[in-house]
View 1 (cartoon, helix red, strand yellow):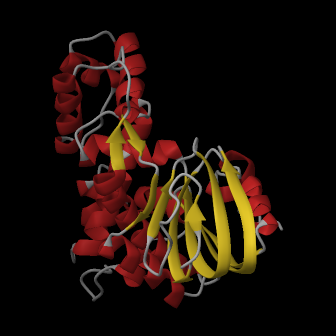
View 2: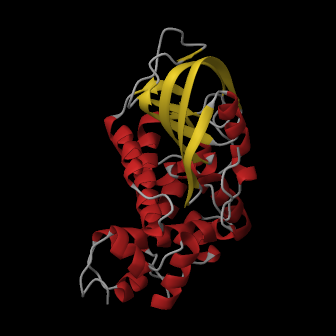
Length: 312
């Protein structure tokens, strides 16, 4: 059982995800892969079905996070360390990349898996939790319930996983899912407080400054002055505290702002380019296509507002 190869432009691979180990685990547990798709932004999705009298299966530190949503059945499936607790439709499991688990699988199961890398999940903490990525981990949770997350997972079934427009819509839905998952299942890492990095107040000051000045040319020297650090130390500690180097973080914030404005406003694309710090519409289009495989106008037509003013 092999997952479809990822397009080269996606900058991610089966090897980096460890998906082959998951495929082997599920195959050994009599599971059949119905559909699979890469969604961009380090996301992948798979739909599985399984019918078995009884089989034991185990996950062994796959390296990527998995969110599992039961669609049908699962009433007799239980985890070894949680005997007597069973799955059911709409129940969810959060399985961190470093987790190990063993399961008794019985009867019919139809389930959806979302696969995502730990770094992508934790980088959201800077904006959504005002925390450093290295402070946060995905909780290991079995059969928890969350109506919003379950609804978003189930909504994936309506899409054509081979259609480029539908893949963009699914990408948007997965981003919403990740935000909800971070809020409900993101936990503080245990142990000593992390050393190094920026002071929380300095991190916030840099984050807010970048947000307020995305329309301008932001240099390492400017950010170093804001942080009262040398350029060398700022570059090193910024990556520790933000999960990305300064230039990559700024590029991601520009792209995220552009996505939000395209989705939620009727502003002309030329104006959005200016508001996000791009030199012109061509510059925005180039960055957008590289990241999402679609032009800004195409993205807006798929998930955002439409109209003659919006598409100018």
